[in-house]
Structure formats: structure tokens, C-alpha cells
Image (cartoon, rainbow over all chains, first blue to last red; front, side, top):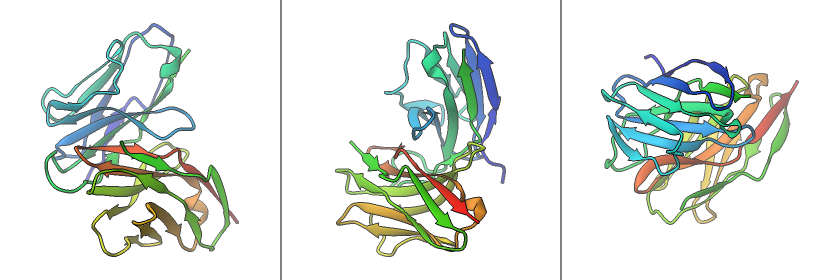
Amino acid sequence: EAGVAQSPRYKIIEKRQSVAFWCNPISGHATLYWYQQILGQGPKLLIQFQNNGVVDDSQLPKDRFSAERLKGVDSTLKIQPAKLEDSAVYLCASSLVPIGQVGTDTQYFGPGTRLTVL
Amino acid sequence: AQKITQTQPGMFVQEKEAVTLDCTYDTSDPSYGLFWYKQPSSGEMIFLIYQGSYDQQNATEGRYSLNFQKARKSANLVISASQLGDSAMYFCAMGGGSNYKLTFGKGTLLTVNP
């Protein structure tokens, strides 16, 4: 079974430029997550989708970050314009269980995109 | 709100020995899950083990076991017979409640010495 795919793996941009990351979850997984991991810290959830609907985007800086999952499969996260403090690894994860089902399902992560903003 | 605390920034262990990585948590949700992930220098988060709050027995997966003490709100990871490839960051995480987002600790950097 193929894992979570992400691209690109690395990206270097200058501040005020825009950037987009792509994620393809494990086939059949209803829930998709984007996390931001700043160096030396644990990942922090940015946005959570169930199918193509947003479940939680409370920690997404909506003035510059946007994300979509139009067909309920792959997803794109965009930053426009980027700031120096956006330098981080952006991790995509997916899980099988939709919201509402009892229990907590395991999230499987992709390899991440390492973003450097100069 | 959920909170995960990992108090060991770094740990060292000799190859073939066992090591325990500490994790304490705080939540008001009656139903939750506790996870451990491994993050090598390549950056990918690798799922290791899961413990549900209602599970009666401690979880085990190969060389990994989770020492779950509910009253103490602790979920320590035990790695037996350490290998050089175990050198990595290890994150404890919690999920559950009204949504399924994971709350992560700050991680512990494990170094296995030959």
C-alpha cells in the first residue's frame, strides 16, 4: 500500500513570494491533516479536512495561508506572501476513520516539505 | 485542552540495552488515544505504537512497548534491545475528544551508542 505522498521535498523562496505544497493521502483515507513543524518543536496542526470539508482550521493564519481538498482526495497548501517565520517542515498526514466514529485513528505522515524563507 | 509533556530533551543508550522515554499528558476528555512517533533525520514521522484510554493492557509492537499508567497520566515508551537505527527524535502525541487532531510533545532525541 502506498504511503502519503508530498511534493516538493524541499523549497527555498524569498520573503513575500508565494509557495504551494501538494499532498496525496493513502487511498481511502477520509481525513487529511496539514501540520507545521518548526525546528526543535513538535508538529502543530494547521488544518484538518474530512473528505473535502474543513473540520478544524483554527490555527491556520488565514491572512496568508490557504488550503483546499477539492475532490476529497489530494490537497494543496499555499502560503502567500511568505514570511521568514514560515520556515519549517510542512507535514501532511491522513487517517482512515471519519470524524464521529468512536475512537482515535492512527495518522500516517508523509515525508514532509522543508521550506526555507530567505 | 490537551497537553503533552516530554521532559527529556535528549537520551543516550548503549546498543542492545533498553531505554525508557517519558511522556505525561493532561486532558479532560474521557476517551483519548496516545501515540508514539519516530522522526529520523530524514524528517518523516513514523508511527510506532498506539494506546487507547480504555485499553486494559499495555500496547506492544515488536521491540516497542507502551507503559500506560492512567492514574499518573503517563505513557512512557520502552524500547528493548536498542539498535543504532533507533537514533532519532521521538514524539509522544495525544488525540481524541471532539476532533481527532494530534497534540504533540516537544520530543526526545535518542542517541544509540555502539
